Length: 361
Ligand code: SF4
Image (cartoon, rainbow, N blue to C red; front, side, top):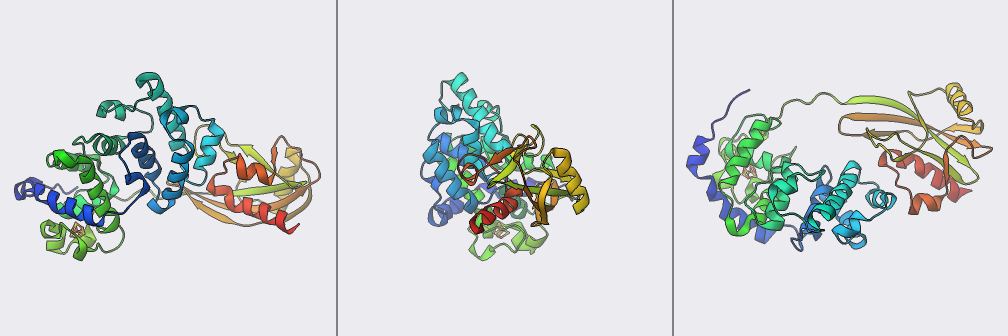
């Protein structure tokens, strides 16, 4: 890996980016619901929701969550089914479970008050370096950098750094560099301004909008015309694929569901019965008979591809009408699906086939 020396950047005075970046953030920062205040609970919930998820997707989820679960105590006491229902469609459900684990821990250990020491924040379930930095700086005004993918990209381009940003050493260097220039009075705004620049100007996967960038005058990539080559990111292992056959089992206006094994992908969440591989109709009928739900009718249903971080499911389905609600499944009504049960996005296209069928019948 090509090593990069930061000495020239440090000598050039990275601190010169602070004032123009803050002025730009004051003028151009997006108005987002979680920026209305710096309540640690609000900052925390928003940062957890924003992990792996786009701002526009998070916005309505965040607003509803804060409305229905307004504080740490209510989160700690929330029934899990309700928590997962509020999270339904956001994905990465471990985030929600960890959020609740952390809320319970805060109730026990800190009497319901969010801890303000970085190490205590970092020790909470579901909180890594980035989120701890975001909470410490935004909610508590501490000079702790929060370096996510957006900030890594900005820093790599700004400094012309050709080191692999997936390498923890690179992140550590950026954390160190930024830690030296945090403006004491506006730590939270500085964190947010860096993230905002990465999200709206120094864009990923397309040309950055250097003409609108408040720190363009200090940017090495812009000076050298190397924006398109940066950041350098080591190749990820190719994503695995898995074929699945999903069964949309319907009986008397109810749909069969079961619970996924706890631990692992979507562990403990509801799913539609399914089998590995793309089963031909004969094999599908055999599986149904084994489950104790011989079909009255079976027709091919929708196909769907769902991409997770490390795996891709290629799903085909059968719509099956059964004579009796047997087979050890939970047979859910449309109302139960709407109000009580959280169904992961991977299975939602199949749910639609059931719900649309109800409307037609
Ligand atoms: Fe990114 Fe362009 Fe600004 Fe450099 S000048 S930080 S490449 S947007």
